[in-house]
Structures are given as C-alpha cells and as structure tokens.
Image (cartoon, rainbow, N blue to C red; front, side, top):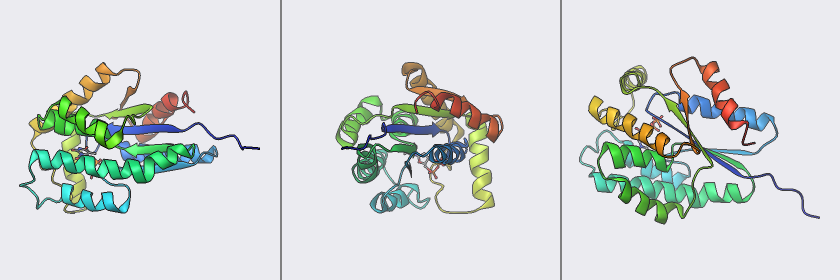
Length: 215
Ligand code: TYD
C-alpha cells in the first residue's frame, strides 16, 4: 500500500533588501515544521554548494565591472542549479519549499532596475525553471528609502563584502520598488503584498493569514 503523499507547495518571499522577509521565512518554516510538514528552505542567489559559489561572484563588492547581461545569466545559472538539485526533487517528494527570492527578483532587479526588460527574463526562465512557478509569493513591502537605510545599517554593524547591490543608488531601489508593485498588480492571485513596516509579530500573523489557506 502506498502511503499518502503530502501536497507539495512552493512559496517564495520577495521584497527589497532589509525588508525582513528572511526572518519571516524562517518563522513560517518553523510553524510548518511544528505542524509535521517537511520544509526545504533555500535563498537565492544560492542554495546548493555550486549555486553558493555563483553567489559569491554576484555579490562581491569588488566585481563592479560585472556586466548587466553577465549578471542576469549568473542569477539564472544559480537558479537552474537550485531548481535541479534542491527545489524540484523536494517538490517531487511532496515537501514544502520556501525560497528567499526567486525569478521575480530577476524580473524586478535585472528586468526593471537594470532595464534588461521582461522578455529577457521570461526567455531565461523557460530555460532555467522549465515552467516551475511559485504557488504563492509573499511580497514583504517596505519603501526604497527604508530599505536602503536598513541594508546600509546592517552592513555598517557587520561589515562584509556582499554589498554590490546595496551600493546602488536610491533611483535604482525606487525602480525595483515600482517593478515589484507592477508585478503584484499584474499577478494578484499569486503575489500577495504584506506590509513590512510594522513589527515582526504583526507581519508574521499577516503572512500566516495568507499561507494557512494553502496548507
Ligand atoms: P542578499 O544578501 O541575499 O540579500 P537579501 O537579504 O536582500 O535577499 O542579496 C541578494 C541580492 O541579490 C539582493 O540585493 C537582490 C539581488 N538579486 C538580484 O538582483 N536578482 C536576483 O535574481 C536575485 C535572486 C537577487
């Protein structure tokens, strides 16, 4: 007799740097595990070891010459490895996968912020993800100014070299914010906005109110 397999679920967290989405993702993972579900947590760029090596190139503050096209290809290279090695196998096992960023980040940062356009992102998505889309995307929303201030404060408190995108201008971050909101307006069924300006517990409750309908 075959054991019943849990329904797989793929949820992504999106938002500006410093939006608090990572904390929220960990809290959601803990809650789902306490309910007996198996949860894979991943974060992009990154995930499996090869994708983590690509991450180091992408976020290295020394790589200021990285061209926009090389940059988007590397994000999708990291994603392809994450999809093939971690995400798709976990979903096939009926697990819940939570990803801190996914293709939507490429759409807003490279497609919008760097002006490479949505078509380039869609073409690469077909190759790297082969139709894999999140069932649900939580957009933890903070404005560009607070995002940049939080990211810079974080870097000042714990200096590290992964600051290449935090070093971008406020205009770049505003373009990203607008691209996120355009995405949420275009795909309201999948992309749900959560107000990221309140306290952690309030945001967690808002996240759970949305996710509980899916599990
Ligand atoms: P990270 O240190 O993981 O920050 P965060 O906590 O904000 O996720 O850095 C990831 C950076 O990479 C972030 O500035 C957004 C950027 N990024 C893209 O530009 N395109 C992408 O496809 C992804 C996944 C991330």
